[in-house]
Image 1 (cartoon, rainbow, N blue to C red):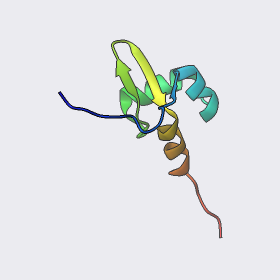
Image 2 (image 1 turned 90 degrees about the vertical axis):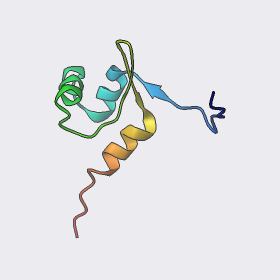
Image 3 (image 1 turned 135 degrees about the vertical axis):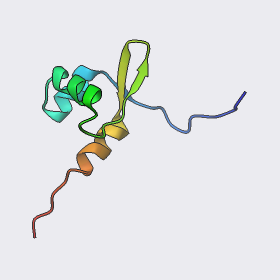
Image 4 (image 1 turned 60 degrees about the vertical axis):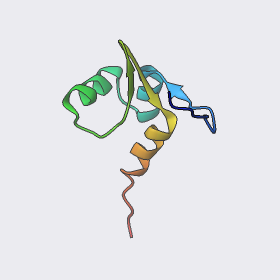
Amino acid sequence: MADFILKRPVKLLTPKETAEILGVTVGTLQIWRTTRRYPLNYIKSGRLIRYRAEDIQAFIDNRMISIG
């Protein structure tokens, strides 16, 4: 059995919370997951879907377009 210690609490967000942050619908997130259209990591346990706050931030950061 692997021993590990969480260094900091992991904030897990629901699809609804994630959709609100990204300005999309929950249905859009579902399409992204099933088609793998965008590389937004998620956690699945049974039917439960959660997103790590740090993965959402990375997703946003990777889409930043700098002008000038």
